[in-house]
Image 1 (cartoon, rainbow, N blue to C red):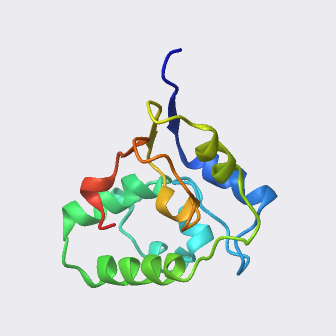
Image 2: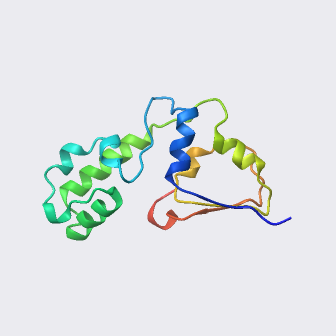
Image 3: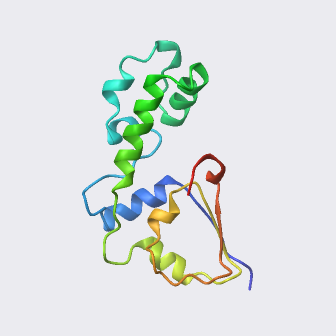
Length: 141
């Protein structure tokens, strides 16, 4: 039997929270609603028009390319860390839990998501299951 290869994006995480909401009521954003969900509107309204973008990843790249040490970048990073740092998984199993438990050792998950948030600590994952964190080079795990 062939290996299963799953490629998961933000939609998978967002869908998970519809059935099993984050304990503190926080929403998981996509790159298109990130500014609103995380609460960055007041910062973004003063961004020069030539740097504005509706997609947060593009907006942040524009700002970072302009001045990676700006006070604006530092405040955005502070707020993003604050928003995500106290998120908690619900106690009941999530879609991700069932998905991961159904995979075999030869299967693969490739994801842009914060999958380490989406999978419960202590979940018995098959040791040979491959999980590729596509953004791993951009973030500390």
